[in-house]
Image (cartoon, rainbow, N blue to C red):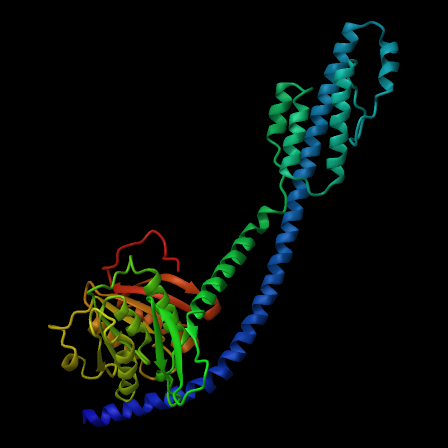
Length: 416
């Protein structure tokens, strides 16, 4: 009975592999098109709102600055006029001499300038700068600081304090978040390009299809097949291999007991073995031949521990083939195990059976269809989940998971 059930499950999984490509092309194309249009409209609306907000803030601050300056200038002019009248009784004569300097800048109203040549030159320079700043709509912080310095040469300390409260706002800070976002996107593209550069292809066509990869200081050759999806190297596997290599100190695999579920061509298991782990690579029976060939070809006499290849059909004979009492794994590795297949419940059951309290799961997840993406929420009912790396351009997220309540809180996510 178990053999019949296993054969049925195997056949269903094989059939689901071939339906995936056509289903994804139809569903994902329309979904991404809608998302692209929605994102484009949202981005245009956000940009328009940001520009309007920046312009409004700038104009408001400029008006407040001009109003405060007019008030302070008027008060200073009255004070200077009274002092001049007290000092000299020849008011008309001095008034006539002052008329030559009545208009010193771009402000509304008359400015009474000082009688000394030094004060007059400072005030004329000040008014000239103020006239220019008024005509400009975007006033930089540097111009404001320079203006305050000039004002300090001829105004009182009280006026300095008042002007010190004036803050000129430009549009630059409003767009800093967008620049940072673009920087993150740029870093993502650079990292993805570095990952993809680890792959190479044969210069000459051979009778067997294979791909080459550079990981853990070795050249790895993977024989592929075209009859099922499990015999092809997917981008999630490259992401996980790159992570294991570049974070080998934090996630030290030397002498660790590691199992990979859904190993496929075996690339992740091979890299883990080259990094010193004792690896068990698992997959469906029909994939074991190619998996064994790749593992043996790339690890023989190169690894501290020779990896093992073993059958694992998700949810079937778990206790028989991997008894809880004797099987303990430090790490569970999984790359692209969630896709359009009807065995997500069995996959979750397999994670639950293999994972002990101190087991760490490293899982590279490619987000495709909404139905399959909901598996992440179901996964979190049993495990604490942490994003340790994200690749938006590939729709791939790298997770670290442990049993509920067993994960230590980290200060920041790992950068790869």
